[in-house]
Image 1 (cartoon, rainbow, N blue to C red):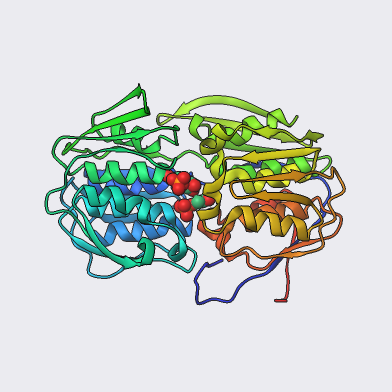
Image 2 (image 1 turned 90 degrees about the horizontal axis):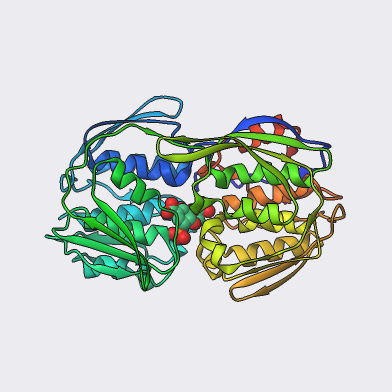
Length: 451
Ligand SMILES: O=C(O)C1=C[C@@H](OP(=O)(O)O)[C@@H](O)[C@H](O)C1
Ligand SMILES: C=C(OP(=O)(O)O)C(=O)O
């Protein structure tokens, strides 16, 4: 279903369905998919990608790479081919780059453009236009880029790349893999060493992929944190990419199985990069029967099959330093927390307020409407569970946020009365097969008339 802003919202209702069971595959990892297209576009030669996520966020990045001069072709389901232009070889796009709902696409491609002597205008949907871009513009400005934007560096924004990009050393003021990646992408076309220091480690897909395509990247632990150094102006060479399954997407059916009595669900080929697995650790601490089988390495990324069985969960305090490794998973963790005995305390998660929606507020309002007790602070929330007794019975506002929509559809499967979401369109940005997969496991979803 399309997330086309011109189309009408699509309300959806989820109701208690009995046990869920089955085996499925998570869609391709969104972070790795964006990067495969971007590095493919910068490399010399033809990169073939398998398992690419064909969600709307990634399709926007594919279109942007085409507009910047790469040849991008779809060969079959998840199978794509990118003929790159070489570092420094991007062309100025003729039209506007519309990144839709995607923060990753917008911020990474800004880094790419900033390192090239070209100008590009970026737009996005209402959600993306509210999100802060100053966090990437500040370092990109230090590297020589200039821009004209709405107040606070919001989209729409026109970015003039540097005539000759300067390598910088940049200490991340916020734990963000998107900011780290934007600086490294700009640094690719800068002579000398670009260094990013991250006080808290974030997902390292960019570092892994830079090496995979032939760049020299060294990572050391320094007094200020993890220090990533990239040697500028490398010759990137096309390399095949097999995209692992997305743990952030697999989280939804797995938590559904943990919370619906009698369920057992197996998700195969899930990426288990340690920068992404904080939710699985947390769920196990809560008492989840969640087992990894067939742990293996595929194309440089750890991968495994995950089996979840319905479990009696208990509330935990999630260590704030774990936040970067589960940053997109707090909405679905709230659903597990709603079914856990006692309190689940989440702290150090202020970043959730600047995602596709203010996710702390969206989850708190939705859970309250469903009869779950929640306390909210500027950078945290506490959910008090009601195991097996979540009332439900509300239609929740999703604010153009796919993860809010999927979380409440999962909650509806175990609530006493159905839970509706006001709009399911955005699910297509990251997990287009969500409804088919979940209904295949036995979930009861039905279209609802608009309120
Ligand atoms: O680099 C990436 O692919 C991502 C980084 C995270 O964002 P931040 O860098 O803003 O934390 C995450 O929330 C997003 O879904 C994907
Ligand atoms: C935050 C997310 O993505 P992005 O920042 O790319 O919009 C997400 O997918 O949860």
